[in-house]
Length: 102
Image (cartoon, rainbow, N blue to C red; front, side):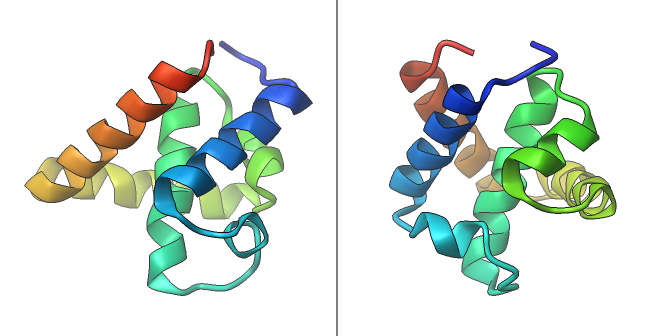
């Protein structure tokens, strides 16, 4: 998947908010609260794993490309080091895979 349409993007964000039990406006806000960073990072990593370029990921979650690069690097580090983080991301991926046809 190299592209994601508006409908898929909306569904992805809605499902992510449902999974993390957060408001969509908060997810897309500039708020740097830790409880919002992980969901954003998981969304970025999920989309990157699906083959989307950083520019497209940035447009989906309304962040700039440098933010995407930073969070993808952090995600890789956490996956390599933190078992719980890795398990949480796997749960998120499984949830989305079951809900989406991406």
